[in-house]
Amino acid sequence: MPAQSAKQAPAELDPFLALVGARRWLVRQTEIRDLAASGPRAGQAIRQRHGVELTLEKLRRQPGARPSAADMLLGRIAGHIPEIMAELTPRGRDKLIEQLWLGLSGQSTLIPVFHLMRTAMLQRSRGFSVTFSGLEDDTPHDLVLRRDEIEAEVACDVVTAEEGRLVHRGAWFRLVDRIDPDLQTWLAAHPGRYLLKMTLPLGLRGGLHDDEPASETLGLLHRRIRDMLEANSRQDHDEAIVLRLDPLLLAGAQAEDMGLISSLRREFGPEAHLSVTTAGRGIFVMAARAGQENEVAIAIRRRLAALAPERLTGERPGILSIFVEDTDRLEWRGLRERLELEGEARQFMTNPEARPVVAVSFVSRLELFGVAEPDAAPGGELRFRNPNHPAAGFAALAPAVMSSV
Image 1 (cartoon, rainbow, N blue to C red):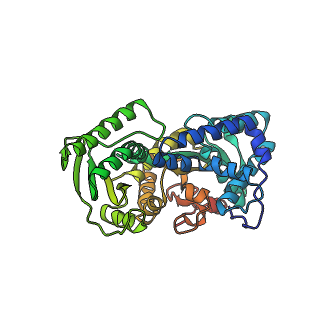
Image 2 (cartoon, rainbow, N blue to C red):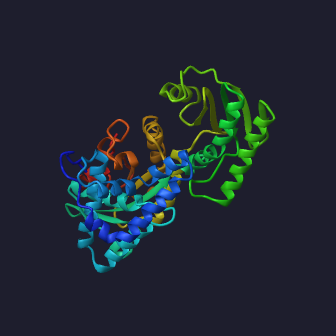
Image 3 (cartoon, rainbow, N blue to C red):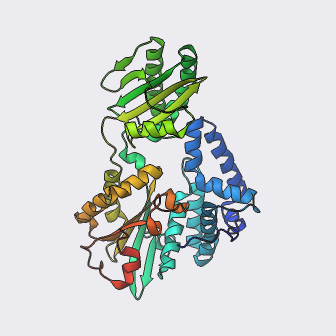
């Protein structure tokens, strides 16, 4: 899907907002603001998670402002949804509205609908006719592509990278927000530069919206750290947690300087969870790791194996279009450059579950928001063809299935 020129006005949002309902839209914006008030770090993560909704609200409130590339792309997709609605039967329109309402409730987001629409737009730009079979006919797949009398099924899905992490980012943000006031108080009485290294062999689970089970775990860990500091102890450990407090010896002038974060990242690696708390001239850094490496790509392979037999009929060549949620620039680029996604995708294609799959594609928020290469995948998606599928060599399907790397 080619990017629009920044000089063009964003797509008209009134038809889209009419579909979801003005009152429902404004209530959702209030809900997001309330959720984002839970703490500075968790709040930032919540705003990022609901970036589609917040970007569209910004466009609605500032119609004369010069839009960014992300504004343009998301506005274009939002503007395309009413156009798709006009093509659907009443049954299909009702199902699409239901999906939009679902994306504006509870812990959900609009990502699944926007991923579906972006995928359809991308395939149409490649010369395919696209039918929304999932909306119209309740098929397990979402789309049917057609080009030169050849058809293919497309199943769109959203997979969270948290499934491959033993220490969840959402839980980490909530923990840091909870303990930050205690750290500031402690720093005021113990001025200096400190590093608390945490190893969590059993992990730390829970998302930004989770409550009781995650809160109990976070509360216990919070108390362990607080008690350790109050006792002026330098270490605490058991089978679930290892804490060690040391002087912070890394180079980096001030906590607000990117040099400190960069030094910490080089020291502890891309998988470490980091936070910096300051009080006066005091600095308290927390660096946490799980007891094993993240397995994000492996978790995605497992999801592929579960999706293929459930979402593809085998009557046509099948494409799995996966949106990888809850990942950032560093992790997404690393998954691609270290060939982790490619390796797991190709391993999946050797398994029996992959028989109906002619190709697998991956996208993230970076592609959805129009971030430039090399942070985002070239061409708007990372795609791998299954050479074992009988349709892998069909010229008509090449634009949708040829490997992109």
